[in-house]
Length: 164
Image (cartoon, rainbow, N blue to C red; front, side):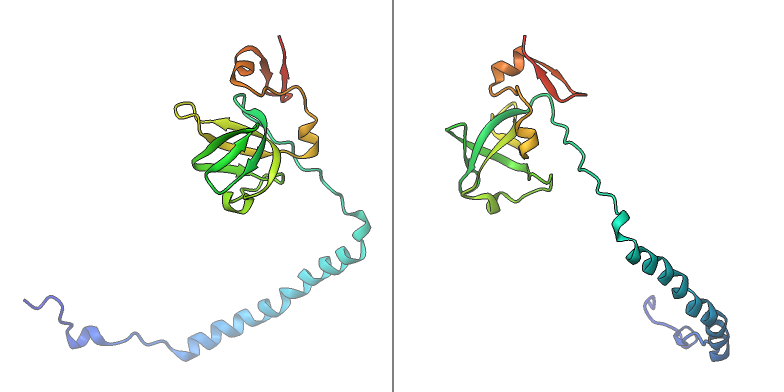
């Protein structure tokens, strides 16, 4: 069996004509040299008018209807203290910082914060945490127990809870 053996005719490398390459490069050269000039003009105009920059407020975060509010203090993962009681973070927990970026749980050891959190229904472990900003902390009332969740009504569009 000679499947892997190449015949001498197959071993030849393809040949490229250097004149073809030079012609292609010569045709592209004016385009390459002219392209950066228009790109520099808007940058200088933008640098001159920095006073017209508009600051956009960050979007408000949407919390799910089963999110509870509490005070959390992070220990060595997965140990946490939630509303003064010891609890555990679930494997694969997602912790959202005040800037809504995901935060590693190991980096939070020793920190305390007010947060919204979700519990995993079957195990009772904390599956998701949102560390709140000062504006989000003032959004009251917010349920702190599962009993409150069962009796209060949540307006998802306005992100407010209505007590019965």
